[in-house]
Length: 199
Image (cartoon, rainbow, N blue to C red; front, side, top):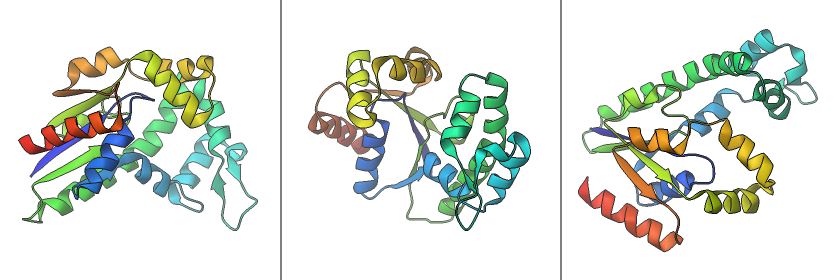
């Protein structure tokens, strides 16, 4: 069984690629979804984060203590040391779950390929779980327009978020396949169909 990693910076269209692949019937492991699952209210990961960062990151208005994602993001955004601590707590658990899901699929003879959608695939070292990596990329102007449409973010905010990620150039250098996503959804899907036909 082959494991193909899919990654790309904010606004590049990585999710559109993964969603299309999943719609075609392929098994896609979504690292972000696992992260949200592991940090759901009352989870062991939320307890670990409270212990590391204090009760200010916890919203206790509900039945179970929940992670206040905005407060958490505000704390780690400008502090690389705290960002590293957050990642070590959450990423370790996410990667362990990704490994479990890959291992489960390896026992299924019908499953020939698994896709791993992970925005920080290279940053977390998760590319070691993959046989090859597809990087989705797009021109800066296209990315900025998409982020503005999707999140209502200003150009300054979008650029600040990009600066917090590994550069597109670095990602593309480490990719086995680079998917340029500057055109229409139809063009993107046609490109993915070609790649899937080669597997």
